[in-house]
Length: 221
Image 1 (cartoon, rainbow, N blue to C red):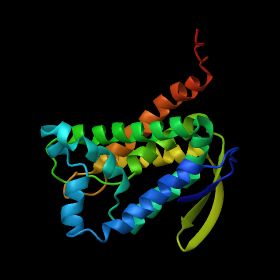
Image 2 (tube, rainbow, N blue to C red):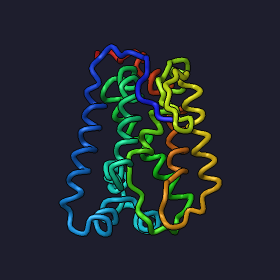
Image 3 (tube, helix red, strand yellow):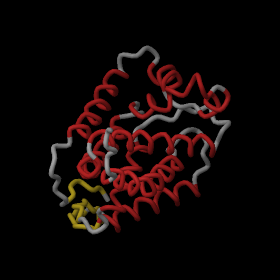
């Protein structure tokens, strides 16, 4: 299944969602100009659990730089598709400052979930999917009934169905949990635990973030 459009209009122009997508695309093309791309770039700017655990202060910036690196075109395209479909509505609800704070915080929590699941790993983690998973978790909480147009492959047949977000996103989460349980975590692959951790973080944090919009501002005396 591949979602490609949600029937959930926004009131405001999704400037930061577009900026994040543009930033990720820019960094992806910059990757090709970096000497020793996969061997050096991902080690220098990706998140290596073993290195982070042993030198967290020095490598803390890598938690965030890793969010803008991608291992390939499909990796980038899949992440940006999900960010575009679901991110604009979360930005619409939170506003720009809270949205970018929420996005980065979910990415941070997702990264820590990955690190502490395998502290000895020396394989760099890269990609925006941990932060985007937080967006998906937030969307599930706020818009469970929103319809999402989804491509479904039935053998050689391809059809489009309108799925409620709650169905699509819980299926997505189920795939992450199953994949994490069945993964050997050997030789790279996908950081499933980052997806799960980011998703749960998004579900937990979205309501406090949204509630903070309605807090009365203190008056200056």
